Structure formats: structure tokens, C-alpha cells
Amino acid sequence: DLVPILRQVEAREQKDTRDYLFIARALAQTGDPTGAGLALQQALQLAPQSRSVHLEYGYHLVDRGSLSRARDSFRRGLESAAPVTKLANFFAFAVAWPGSFLFLAGSTLLLAFGFLVRRPPSWLDALQLSSGVSQRKSAAIVGIAVAITMVALSAAFLANGDRTAFVVLCLATTGSLVWLVASPLKVPIRNMSRKMFSGVSALLRGQIYRRLRQLPERRQAALLIVTTFAIVFLVPLVEHIDLRLVLLVSLSLLLFSLLGTLLLAMLRYTGTLQTSLRWLAIAGTIPFLLFMLNVERDRLLYTGLTGDLLEYIVAYAMVWFLGVALALRMSRILSRSIVEPVRQIMDSVARIRTGDFASRTGVVRRDEIGSLAAAVDEMATGLAERDRIERTFRRYVDTRVAEKIIADEAGVTRGNRIHATVMFCDLRGFTRLSESLEPEGVLELLNEYLATMAPSVQRWGGVIDKFLGDALMAVWGIPEPITDGPLAGVPTERLAVEAAMEMLASVDLFNARMAPLGYGSLTIGIGLNSGEVVAGPLGSPDRLEYTVIGDVVNTAQRLESAAREKDHLLVGQSVAEAVSDWATVSELAPLTVKGKRNPVRVWTVVSIRDSLADLIDES
Image (cartoon, rainbow, N blue to C red):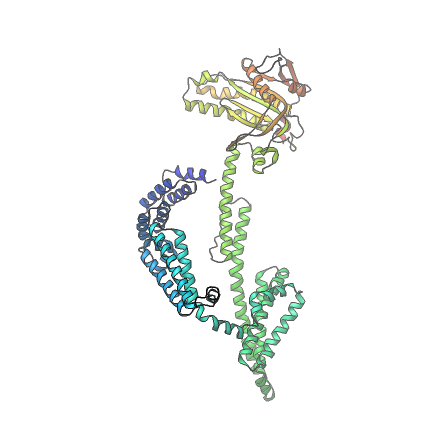
């Protein structure tokens, strides 16, 4: 799949840096590292300041074992880069400045070694019990073994830039950093999590959320109301601050888990994400309103006795309305951030469905929607390339055969027996004519002639099997009989004879058109034969051709050769018998053909009656 595109890019006269980078990567994939290096050098000549080209060339040199040259290439690519960029290309940084990299790794491992000796971890207890060595000595032995290993890996990395050694060094350094940071904090974190988040762990693990989704929607709504009232009225009654926080966080997570499950349920009824988010935003403000009313209940009761209740109700209502407005605004922003790019993707998919493979989503994001948009764009690019290949393929193979090959139907890809009619058509005296023409003139004349003959074959339902210089081979009945249209059910012999007679008439029109150009009068000979053939792929595993083989094919070609001096149509016995009801046929003297013991009976078609041409023209 890659080689044709590679050859197409290599054939361009004007190449840019991206072309050479593609050539280098393609050659590397196809097993030509020398060619890949030459392509990268060409890219460097075009863009000597390009950071990406220097880095890619450095990776190529590392793979080829040229570590010193790779170090120079990496340094040129990273010298002016920001620290973040250098860290992003950490392997290139390590090869370019191995001293800094090994100093960082060695310092981290030394700190870890010191911490290991000073505070041996619990897993050394098993080593102490099995060997009888104290924890500190065991830690020292482990540290020395790790140090020797790291020195050996560092030497391997310095010698040839070994990537395995680099990965092991990075993993050891990262693991040491994590252990240095997390080990002293392990006990406090464990105690804090047990004290504050014991009731929330099930929610964080997603177990409660999965169970909530299994509940009926009515029970989910009822549980949502109970959770809301618990947050509003029960949590404020808890005096212990830690327990109150644990209950508040747990019930809040349960509340939002319920809101999430109801959101998925509402999508089945509302049909749009925007409407669901709007109602959930309004519902989300109600618990806070109730919580505020519960906290201020004493003041409300007092104002109710003094006559100022209306003012407080108006004030609380204004605050709640403001909260609702802000929630609706946030829900709109959230829905737009989700819905609009999804609509863009849907519009692009709709255009792609209609065949507009140049369509792009225009969505650039870092989240899952952005990944989906990028996947749709990549799909459009792949479909465009596939469409181009398919259109090109159809120019070289008949459309019906191409569709069967693309669909991977067994009858085409493995071959089958089928009744077919085979035609061979050849120009007479063309070899003598081509001696007086330049090669370009020969090609032009042949294309004009074949462009005149081919439509007659296709018009009458035939498949052009191949062009053989100044001859063509056509078959009727493959890849399967015609089942629709005006030609459905018509015997293949009749279709082939109709096409042959039309081709004989087209030769006169072709000669009249080419006479002003100085070409002589051309004549053709046609041979037809029908019977059982084997139609299927022929060739090697790397180069196949869909064609038909059998004695029927050989006899048709011999008939065409026999018509060389007669300038008319010769048909075999099977064709003559099939068309005798509507065509005038005349039997000729039997022919002795190469490869057959007995002479072959031969007929010529003098004329046809009740032609189907008018029926085809009307359709």
C-alpha cells in the first residue's frame, strides 16, 4: 500500500521538506535505511534550521550506530529549544548531553540509596529472615547491586546510545523519585484517607454509580429527593466537623451521581443534550436554596412574626433566580462546547456520505471530541485515497468486474465455471501501416481505433478482457449474467453478434474520419465462440488478471485468425445455432485449426433481423 504513494512522491520534480521526510520514513519502513538517510540529508539541505528534521536525522543516526554524529544532530535541534521542548524530547536530550542526563539519574539513585540505608523498607524484613543479614546490610547490598547495574547500563548508553539502557535508567530514576516522595507520606496519607474518605471510597471506585444505573428511574428520582433533604436538613444537625464534612462530601457525590444517571435517562425523552442540561441545572440549584432556607429558618420565623417576611422571601427569591440564571448560562456554555463540535462532525460526516471526501470537521480540541473529529478527518482522507484508487482501478478493469473484486466475491477471486461468449477482434495490415508511422502516431491511431470499437462491446453488455496491441478480447456472461435492464435474459451469443455487426459497421465510419489525416483504409476480422469457460484470477500472487480460459477461448482466437483474409465475422457452431432464429448465417468450409485433430465447422453471419438496437436506444 505504501510503495505506490512513495513512487508518486519520488516522481515529483519539486519536493519540499515534508516530501523528503515522508520519503525517509517510507524507505525506513520498506527496509532501505541508506535511502532514508539520503532523504533526510536532502531535507536538511532545504531546511538546515528545522528542529524536527535534525531530531529525526539524529534518531536515524542512532539506529545506524553513528552516535557522535547523532549527538551533533540532536544538539543542533535542541540548542535553541525551550526547556519544556527539551524534556519532551528526553531521549534526544540524553544523547546530546549525556553528562547532564547521567548526573540527574545518578543523583536521584544516590539519594534513593541513602534513604534505603537510613530507612529500610518493610520488604527487607523477608530478606533478613531468609538470609540472616541485618536490614541495613541488606539495603547496602541491594543498593550496591543496583549501582553496579546502573553503571553497566550507563556505559552501554554512552557507548552506543542503547535505548533499552536508556529506558531502564529512566524507569529506575522515576521509580526512585516516586519512592522518595511517597514513602515518607505513606502513613499520613493512609490515616487521613481512613479518617475522612472511608465513606466516599465506594463512590470513587464507581460501585455505587453502577448500581444506581441499574435502578428504575422512579427510584432514582426518589433517592435524589431523599439525598437532597438529607443534605439540607440532616447535615447541619451534625455537630462534629469531621463527620459533617464526610457526610457532606459523600452525599454530594451521591447527589451528582444521581444527576448523571438522570441526565442519561432524560436524553431518551428530551432528545437533546441542551434541554437535559438546562433542567438539570435548575434542579441543581434547588438543594442549595433549601439548604439556605434551613440555615436561616430562625431568622425567617422571627421576620414572619415581625411582618418583614415578604422582604426576605423576595431577597431569597432574587438570589435563587440569580443562581438559576448563572446555572442556565453555564449549562448553555457546557452544552454548546459539546453540541456544536458534535454538530460540525455530523455535518462533515453527512457531506462525506454524499461523496465529498474533501470535507473536514474544523474541530480542533484536546479532549475526546477532538480525537473523534481527528478520526473523522483521517477517515475522510482515507476514503478520498480509496476513492481515487478505486476510480483509477475502474479505468483499467471493467466496472462490473471491479465491483466484484472490491467486494471480494468468491466467484471472482477464486474462479468458477460459467457459460460465456468470447470475441477476438483484430486489425488487418496494421503491422505494415505502422512501419510508415512514428511510434506516437501508432499509439494515437490505436487509441482512436480502440475508442471506436470499445463502446460497441460495452453497449451490448460485454466485458473488455484485454487489449492485445491492435486487437481486443471481449467476453459476454462474466462476471455473471445480466439480470436487469433491456438486455436481461438475452443470450450472450446474440449480444456478441449484435456487437460484432455494429463494430463492422463502425470501421467504415472510422476510416471516413481518419482519411483526411492520410491513413489508409483499415479492415478487421472478428471471431466468436461460446460455451463453458473458467473465469477467475490468473497470474502470480503479486500480479493477477481476471480473465477466462478454456477451449472456447482458443477456438474463438483461431476463428479470428481465419477471418484475416475475409474481412467478416466468423462464428462457431454453438453461436450459429443460438442466433439462427433472428440472423442469416451461412456455413463455410470446415477449418483445420492448430491444436485440434478434427476440422472445425465455421459459419459467417450475413445479416440480422429484428435487432435490439432500437430497444437499447429507447432505454
